[in-house]
Image (cartoon, rainbow, N blue to C red; front, side, top):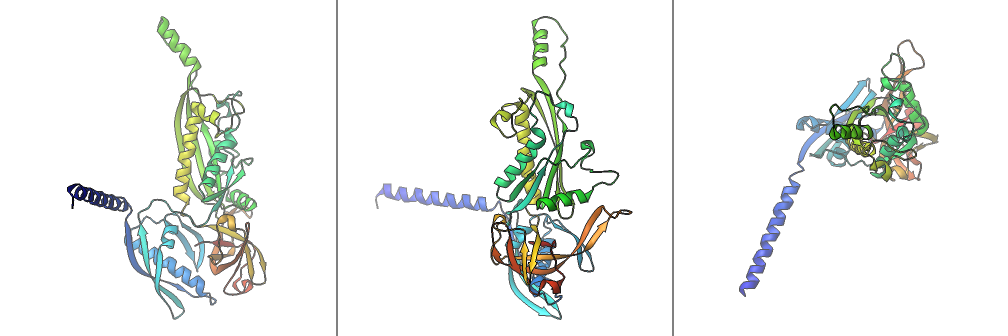
Length: 411
């Protein structure tokens, strides 16, 4: 074999080995651990599908405990009723990577043995798209914005956040920026009176808008520094005073919140701060998200805050379970308020939670503190349209106590 050809083959082998080595390094950044666990759940009213789903969930939680995983699961149980169930991290990823290897029924208990594939990823890839309504971000100090500046900040910032979330493919944004949740923005996220949260307002808005999450916030600071004379004499001092007058600094502080529209819980709260200088005034009629907006330093810094907030919201909520509601029941057919646009498919199975009533604030019959819900059955999707889907339960809805308005969850 010619020497040149042998050298070419050797070089090709070295490149291939190097590529394999690099691939191993890339793969090593994501740690995958397989854990075999068992889970169990009681079978009630003959609903084996529900018991199976609950047993798988129990197995996943057992795996997370064994692995000391960063799953955050808060479940308040009272006589098999769920007052609050929030699996906030990695849940979707774990469900999609769980393999049931054995299952059996014994003494009315459904047992599963499963291999759970735990990964080190920091963000889930949601199976379903969740709806989020954007409400206005009022200014704590309206005087911080000049009358010659744009008036689009209050509605434009939340609008742009939901637009980017929608573009990600994991959310469906609904524009409700004509709505202001906070009568006194300075007290946000407190909504009214002495109570920390008027949950009924958030839940009512979510129900009317057909959304799972409610985005809100306040522009807490947008103050520019006052023009002032720089001490000294001569041309340099004069130039500094002139420069200070026309090129001011501006403090930017924006608080952003996301509430669960079903339970009213505050799921996300973060304060974002930055400093703009130079060209700080945003001209009148300039819209948030436009190139003209980003050309100003204030607009540029607010755009960075928007992008940062979108990333933080995705990390906090991407793994949160998908929720929707039952909108109609006809015989054994159950209609839910989600369809193709939420990425539902025929054969999908969702858990139905029936209501055990509402809990009101002490000495108040109108201010809702929360809802008692219990998992009642598994809905198997049989038909999907763009805006709604139809499914069937293991037993007739009336036998399970399921009615219009009950919740349907992915988990």
